[in-house]
Image 1 (cartoon, rainbow, N blue to C red):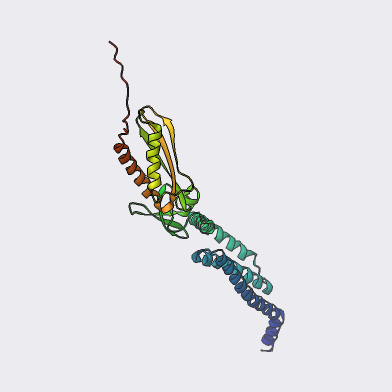
Image 2: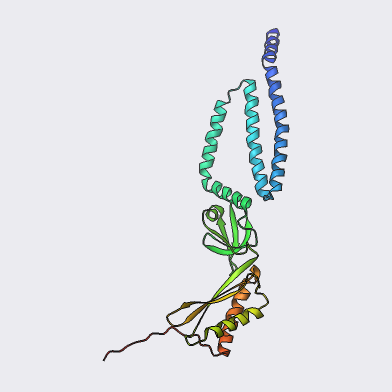
Length: 267
């Protein structure tokens, strides 16, 4: 019994202080990790990051910090941490290889939320798809096409290609092209189109609309019409001007010619 007590006292004398230091490191580490979590969350909230992304990032940071604190505590007791680090590294490599595609999608989703190339509700063309953005998730984004189909696209595919955001700006330019007969008077045609533009309430006065003869085609004089309107009124202006121009040309007996070809027959 005396031998057991002696060995016990020797163990306490040898490891007691080390165990105490390890516990103190764990306690201080816990306080420091909580403080870091609060700071990181505040920074992400100020940048208006998505709550899902910020919580996920904070969880990763917290896990990494706890691993660091635990390894320091074990080293104070005298346990060799080299083997633990090697195991963690091998496991991390295996997980990274297994989830390579998912990690790429996550990184792309984080970049989408961070840099905001588009928002929910925007009309976007990306990865060969044009539609309204329905949701931006961690690994993918949801689009609703104009014929009411829901398409889910991996975020890495979106970030690896061109992104066209049709609703990012408040105003857009409507480009139209009208072809009329060669016998039509240029001034008359321009006056008709300018009259339609002036009467349309949705067309902006600034920037100024333009109507110019742009091309003498094979069978028609082609006019380019450029007007500006609010983004939400784009298609209304586009269809209105197209219909009204046809009606005005008919009323003023301005022909819209079909493609023509002269055929010469040799006797």
